[in-house]
Length: 355
Image 1 (cartoon, one colour):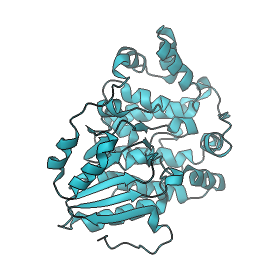
Image 2 (cartoon, one colour):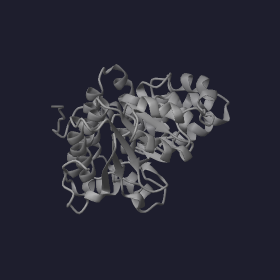
Image 3 (cartoon, rainbow, N blue to C red):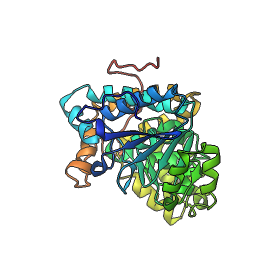
Image 4 (cartoon, helix red, strand yellow):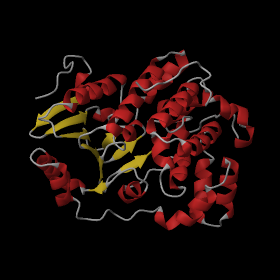
């Protein structure tokens, strides 16, 4: 039996709600869009969690994505592009509700099982990696790729990545590189590895048994080897630098081919986004709570709506797909400290408060 939610809305089926035994399920149901999140989907998830929070018959909540490509590719960035071009407020309103949902998931008192199978990016990380039971598979590809579209990691991404071991989180934030199961666990984005063929059996068991009993029966295999551990020395050294320019210089000076390729990747990203991201990551390390980091991210996100790089990045990567963004400014050296400061001041007058 589903909770009391507006099931007759045209977009209600974008999130499927179900109850089976002890478990209630949330299924993101936009497979053709790789389950990208809309504002209506965020609201529906929040309404479902409200209904289930104090329902004694619901012991566990399980999040999955429809289709065979992944859990969620993020927010609907085409809609964000259109809103930014028109000077609207829909994106700011969406982020406000989305970030509150991210914080709610992090505080959820019952087991919140996020099945991070396949592609999990951006907003998909926000509704999964803040949960208290996070499952990855051999197909998982987890990423915060925002610098490639002229944006900055949000949905609590800078909170999660700033707390990864050493400078691994800085590496992932600046490059937007996806990681597999083993590296996602190392970086604190996931907890458990379950081979994808075992997922149906696990989900069946969760309807009958508590998570603490069902999960260990499916986590007996190690994940496929990761790649980050072998590169920790140069990652930790290079990304400890104070500026993006120095990070790039250190990467190029290592003599390591993978480090050189990483520098080349970074230099394809928005110079402004790179500098704002580095500062956001450094500041997130010093902020004690997820809510404080989300408040910082909200200021940055709203400021990005009036930055030319967000519109240009989405145009290049998603709309025209020419993969040739014309960033403004086009070079790291042309992005001043004052330009970066502006993203942190809430200059557009918007503020974000948790209530």
